[in-house]
Length: 169
Image (cartoon, rainbow, N blue to C red; front, side, top):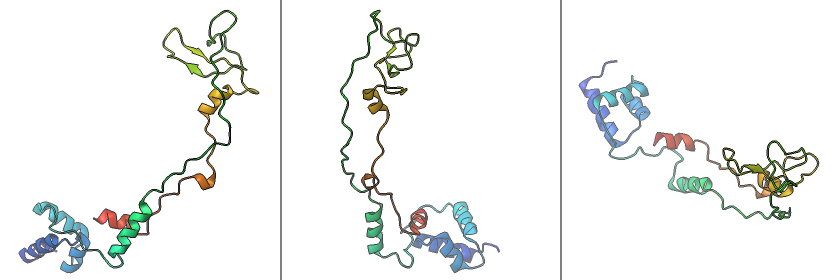
């Protein structure tokens, strides 16, 4: 199929009206959507005068409903049922030093304190519970309890075909 002057003028007119490439291809006949897109780019046609008109089933109320569904639900504050452990200062060894890589044992908290590149870097060193890596205070910081299913934010849902309509606009 060759692009005649008449077809090019029809393409320009339909493009300015805001029709999509697929709609223009259907109206002209004998060309594909990609052929229309290619010709639009070669002609250097820029933005459109008006956006493409919505197709069947896309009433203004449907657009409002899409916005309502896509809006994130307000988050409820979840109160913990686990009591907050009291802060415990890092352990000072009998020698007066803090726990380091050389002095830390299996039952000592391995929470790092300070910059590892500096000489004053050390670990918490407080006792842990049955082979855990951290004391109660630092375990609370490191591990967050799972949220109850009813307290989790609802997943974001969209209507079928909404992504296609948004991509086409």
